[in-house]
Image (cartoon, each protein chain N blue to C red):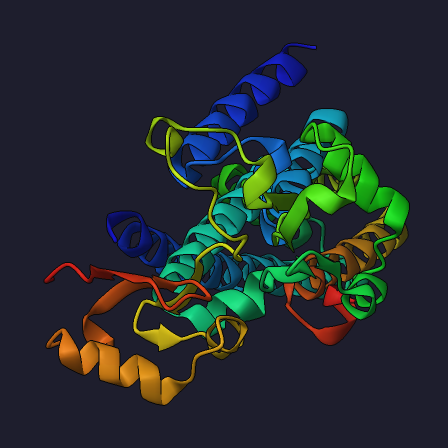
Length: 126
Length: 225
């Protein structure tokens, strides 16, 4: 009986944890996506200072969330995002706005992909 | 390399804890569902050790989920006979009154060769010695010898060899009547309820009741919770 009750409790805890993790992923990807979208706009307008500021925000936001992310997201997805950020820093430094836009576009797609791949949809399950 | 070592250590401890928590039996005694769970757990545990890109929780959560489900299914199976039969199946009689039930053997896809092999493992070399055989849900076959071939016990000395009879079968478990077993003993529900009434009991009071073909029965009452 005791093990049965503990098992039920663990399952409930698991369900709550998984739901919380999903919300966390959604919140993180949305946040980074919003900053990336703003950075994209600044890059389109070739505004160096503004683009640099958004990049710093992206880095800061990613730094805050990366550790938790690694617990439940595949590390290759995380590596891709980290790579993108590293490349962005170089492109922004060289004021190569075209490459900045491309990289931001890629990063936004990756963020969307991370969220969609965590969703328990029919496609993902099967 | 150090990551591999640490991951292996963590997963090893988790699996040992999980198996300890589940109270597992030996491989040869596992029910089909339990065998699947054990195999799945070992396969899942290997994934993050082989591929560092998979987060540890990607293995730990499925393992914990599997052993929790196993405990829940076992618990429900111990309380509800019908659920247990759904989850693990029910034992099937393949030899009764010394006669092989060939239809049941075909249904279970057991050949005569398989039967003989199981017999030999129990040191039985002549099928004529077998009164009763039942295939358990784990796949093992249990044999009951005819009276003439049973080992003598202290109480048998100076006693006449009784007529061969089928062994007692469980006719009530956890308050549920097992109609097949009851029928096998040549009894019906009316007889069962009368016996219970004679003993001042109701069906819900019964933890286990066994009965043989001669009508001898034994009752184990359910513990008051």
